[in-house]
Structures are given as C-alpha cells and as structure tokens.
Image (cartoon, rainbow, N blue to C red; front, side, top):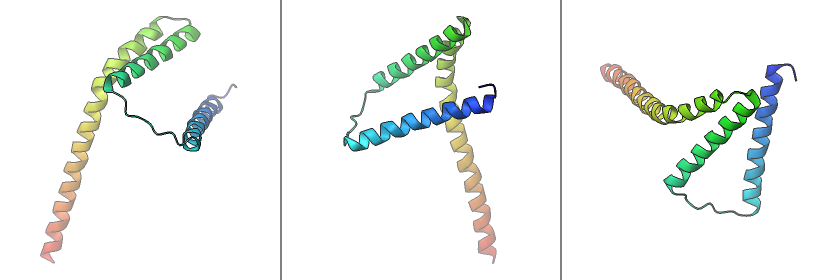
Length: 109
C-alpha cells in the first residue's frame, strides 16, 4: 500500500469491524457489563499507552518514540479535561447570549 489514504482507510475499516464484532458478540450473549473502578480504568489506559508506544518504537526502531508516548499521557490527562470544560463553558456563554438577544428582540415586537 503506497497511498497513505488507503492505509488509513483500511486501518479505520478494521477498527470499525472489530468494534461492531464486539458489539454483536455482546448482544448475542446478552452480556451485562459490570462497572469498573476508576483505578482499573486508569491502569488499562496506561497499559494501552505503554503497549502502543512500545509497538511504535519497535517498528520505528527508536526508543524515543516510547518516551514521547509516555510523556503524552499526563499531558493529555491534564489538557483534555481543560479543553472540554472550557469548550463547554464557551458554548454555554455563546448560547445564553444568543437566547438573551433573541428574547430581547422578541419582547420588543
């Protein structure tokens, strides 16, 4: 595969197929998920990050790739909530301003 678009389309298709396969398997077996503790969720995320970094550094033949993956985890843990919270607040501010202006125009008629 020489074209990068075909590569990413194939990766996306495989991820989509695996996801739907797991969904159909869970529905067929009437699987009821149990809630997991936050500690286990954090450990799974850290392990997935380590495995992904290890695989990328192995195929890239550079240990520094793993370091960047491991450094990116705490950065993402801090920045993603900040981005989501600030976006949520900005959207609420804009929508409340729009509705306030709309209400003012409606009351003048």
